Picture 1: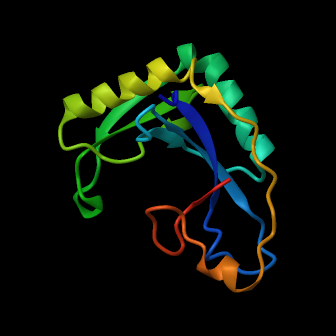
Picture 2: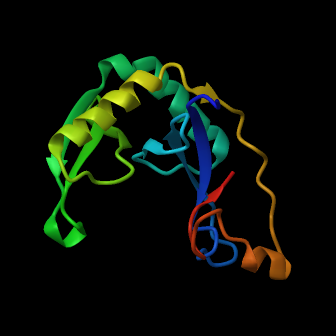
Length: 148
């Protein structure tokens, strides 16, 4: 079984105008490949993104967890956010119908952060031509996040 691990993702690769800077984020996925949480911020490069993961691992014990209901326009449900020194560092990857499910997911996230596999970010390669326009993240739609 594959252990829980941090993934680095490039945001909006399909929708970004030529020449606009790339943005990156991280996601924490469990052994079952389901997302446990994601970064609350975006980063200029994969190295900066990995550094944020390292800071989270070092300071997860200092984090403050907040649970709240999402607005009805966004589909409603419960979501969590993790803050360190008042700054959001991680958020739930989705909303939950029940508060207890949201709390359980937060607990799973906090339990796995210190032990999750930390990969080195892959080098970012520029894509050109038809293949670049057609590439879609597995199980995704055009414009979805592409894993780095």
